[in-house]
Length: 79
Image (cartoon, rainbow, N blue to C red):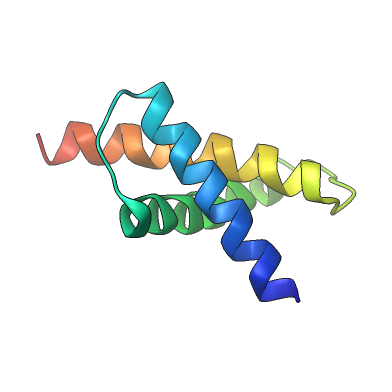
C-alpha cells in the first residue's frame, strides 16, 4: 500500500510542477519528476531539520516543492 501512495503522490507532485513551470510532461514524465522531486524534497527537509509528521499532506508538500526545484534546475541545465 505504501508504494501505491508514493506513486500517487509522485504523479500529483510532478503534474503540479509541470503546471507551475509551464512545461510539458506526460504520465511517465510527471511520475519521474514527482518521484525524483520527492527524493530531493525529502533530503532537503532532512538537511534543514524540518520535522514533518509523515502524513500524506506533509509528503505531498515536500514532494511538490522538491519537484518544482528539480524541474527548474533541469530546465536551466538542459536548455
